Image (cartoon, rainbow, N blue to C red; front, side, top):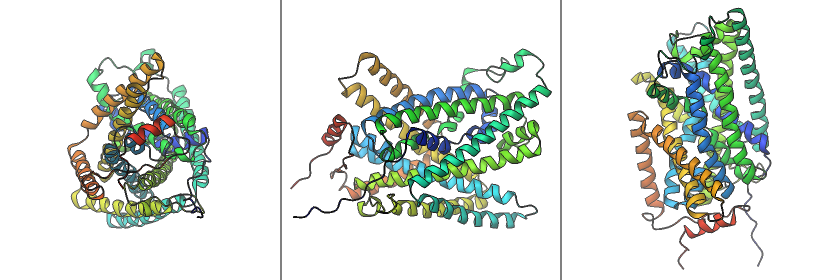
Length: 483
């Protein structure tokens, strides 16, 4: 009997630095620029300290992601880890929650970019501004989708170009900042340390409140693990790329906000949302103001396109396990070797979601972008908690082969990471939690229908180079099909 042709799989083409570049673009080297004003107000000027606290906190979770990618080099990221390590039903809920995260990211990026580009057109009335924004929402949604349909190598090349461009803008800003401080030196040595510690405004609660917002600088690093099946040596490179990305972003972010703070002490910004652009204008003139504004457009473009890419891989992994309809979501285009159905679907959802939020903003006078960011964090933080819990169970409770120091390190990273993420999750706004819980409730109803009230278990697809012990645990978590 002839063997049927196997389904085409994903293509392993990404090395360590391609993964790091993807993570940097997804997070954005300019990430602290857009939230600088809010973080400065909430932390009463201690933005650098808040960024550094956020870096340490997220590196613990990044380490847990890397550990789990070691055990399960699968495209599903948090969904795959929790499903295989803890229980398929919990993994399904984590996957459902981070669908929210991955879909909201391109939606809010499209909204921000469209409004920013429309703002460059002079002399527009409010109604004309809205019309142009809607047109740009259509154009950028189509552009994101077209880019991600080309194949993973093309996406990697685009990421490299974006990373180089954003890196150049950051370097130019830092150079302009140094030049400005040479021309306008600070009055005393103590002024150089105020971004870290200002005795007049410092308090532990204030700084940690600012840090809870500054952690948003790092949201997106988990997207690296969604490319595990397209990476060379994923059991090594995913861990290194995830931790390196958090570290590099943390160092860049700290330098950016440090110079911003010494150039513009205090929090009396003309506009909190564009505070960093105003600081760039003070340091380098109008040309640098424009350069930073354009850089933020490019950064959001890269982040939105990257999240669109990651969302397609997440849906592919869930479809392959038949947690969602396998025929549609688990299909891979044999020519481009990407899950084209998922990319197209996310493109449609992105377009509709951006238009709906824009209408809500116009009718209800709410900040669509800010609310979308909170919704994004609802799913992201739940996923982070799930990954930390999975790492603790796999490497501490179940793994008997680790040395004492290695086990202690795994335990510390996963427990600290889980605690920080849980604290941040309960600190979200009321309406973000309500909407997020409604999304989860929808997932419960759908999951109950798909699995006969969760009595029918998922059958996990084997990943060729997964840890054999991890595969054994995943198999034990799933009941064998009944004849």
